[in-house]
Length: 410
Image 1: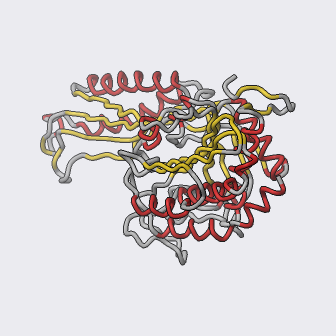
Image 2: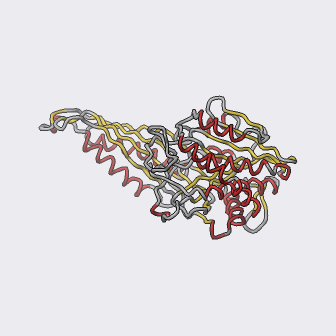
Image 3: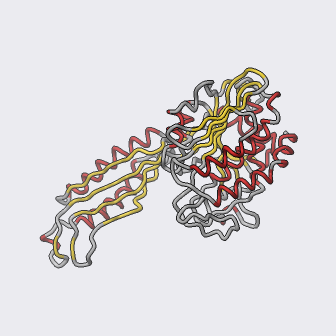
């Protein structure tokens, strides 16, 4: 483990340079030609089996070890967000309306660093490490597209791991949990239809505005009174669009938001109940309302054995004081969920709180002022390497906290 930390420290400057390069040139969605080119350039000459996506600008690189064995997947997402950066960094985004505000630039740089470290140690590996550089995590289902293109096949992946940075955790610390770690995220759209009219004679109209307001409040009450607090669901209406004039009652109100859950059961209960609620409230007022739910990412569910393996490896690498078990899931969503639906594995969070800032005060992911501690990138490189090395050394099995081993899928 000390050797891996030293090797990760040795590539620190290259990792930081790549992180800053990608941060300054953010791209959004499934087509990221500049980012893909930067990754391919960084991987050139390392003796990898590299392939790029047919429908998306992904990169998949296989590092074959010195002996036969299982295949383990390490994944980094690459896309940015539609935000205007306000950090003041020297390497701030030069692209109007785009910013790496979720740390995917760091994810890419750390995984490239891990490739370099492990490529120099390939003869000691018994199996294959597959490095996946994925576009389109921010709502574009990039992981699903890569799976459809064979990400988990030939040779088949036995287990999968991913890291996600968080400025709200102590720098260099590692956190995860077995079971649900992140929520599903579906888009809600509600249309309330009444009858327009003059603001001076609302009795001659069917005003959808107060009905829409009642629906918003009822949604919040539904979640707290019909869904178990131990199987959390979060429903948020974040956008309303109604009339354009102060003296005109509109015919229609349109609302949108998100529905998040950590289990398929909670997700289904909320979807069915909200549809009934919306239609019933409108009908009580002599109007109509329809709920449309656009399915998003499913919950991200860690295999319990794989999550324990991550914590054991992280504790051996960093010391137990720099690891922790998350008490509850995060209600954000992540499309690594598609991978974990098909293969055992785990997502873990890497703390990157910037120096001189308390984790609770740091600008979080998706803030246009988010910054991170570049020194924590070395920890991410080393942890990627340790997870792959230990997994292959155990023949594709994960170590339990008692030191025994069992298949990750058990």
